[in-house]
Image 1 (tube, rainbow, N blue to C red):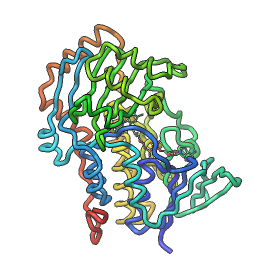
Image 2 (image 1 turned 60 degrees about the vertical axis):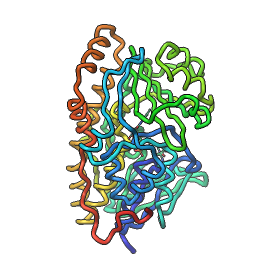
Image 3 (image 1 turned 180 degrees about the vertical axis):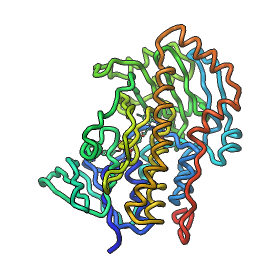
Image 4 (image 1 turned 180 degrees about the horizontal axis):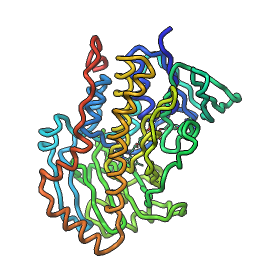
Length: 399
Ligand SMILES: Cc1cc2nc3c(=O)[nH]c(=O)nc-3n(C[C@H](O)[C@H](O)[C@H](O)COP(=O)(O)OP(=O)(O)OC[C@H]3O[C@@H](n4cnc5c(N)ncnc54)[C@H](O)[C@@H]3O)c2cc1C
């Protein structure tokens, strides 16, 4: 039997890791607490760095076929005035790959479909891990009672509120509230068609609030709306209330809110790992994605970095023994992801400022930023080189 891995969490990070490990010869089982692997989430932006990671996984053809290449990125003010613009030609000239947006469920399905012999278990809620036996084991609560399983490697991909992280790093303080909540919605194609929205990733800045728009697969339009909120507040839930908050903002924001089916509305308070973890590895438990380095959505990189993690981890494990590979992964991933988490947290505080003078300063600086400088900001995240493809692996096995 080959080397065995348990992946806990079947989000983008967990499934990417399962895919990466399976194609490098591991025997993999994925567990998630959800009752089913149904379509969840809203839109997601896949930046050039993650396009490269998906290429390594042999899935970029699917991504390109199903996602929408963004013709650029722009920042506008609530009045509609455009203050910054990075055209696709610039993005692609600098980073070789496009910025692609699609429904998260679509990306999730691409990853699920890519798994060939990975065992998949739903309804398994992880409760802890044991690491002092030489072979890690994980305990679950299941519908039929408690269960403990062990393997050569345990991958903690159970998200920002990771139970496994708490189990192997009990002194870690846990996630920090970013100070704002996010609503998200999807406008169906037949409604969006009337609005004539171009596929340019757009973020509009107001005072203590922001609104984002992206055209995604099948002509749908994804939007998100951020608003400052005290931690634990029970905010308005109705779409009408969100629409009222943004009613004076530029078109097509009010129109998108009016065209959103209420059942598609999602709301999440934003948490991230402000304090850096001392390591992403403990014994043979390795953390990936939000479990390791949850970033605020301000730089749109959480899922992108999770896919990178999967690739770097599988590559290291393919080249050396488990313990050496885990050390390599830790050294390779912590500086980049923790730096980006800090940058994103700071950016979020600036972008969500409610102070009128700070808002004016923010908008003035944005207006003065020349395109090359904007691109330089983007390069902190977008410029990333994946490991060499593994010899004998086709680049597009499903392409
Ligand atoms: C508003 C918003 C917009 C975003 N936009 C972008 C974007 O455009 N681009 C981008 O790259 N990123 C974006 N992100 C970030 C991105 O969504 C996350 O970083 C990414 O989904 C993390 O993936 P993950 O697999 O690590 O964790 P998750 O997606 O959280 O998956 C964790 C999985 O673990 C399971 N789980 C949790 N606890 C347990 C348990 N105890 N037992 C068993 N299973 C468990 C969960 O059910 C889940 O399936 C955004 C985030 C937000 C909030």
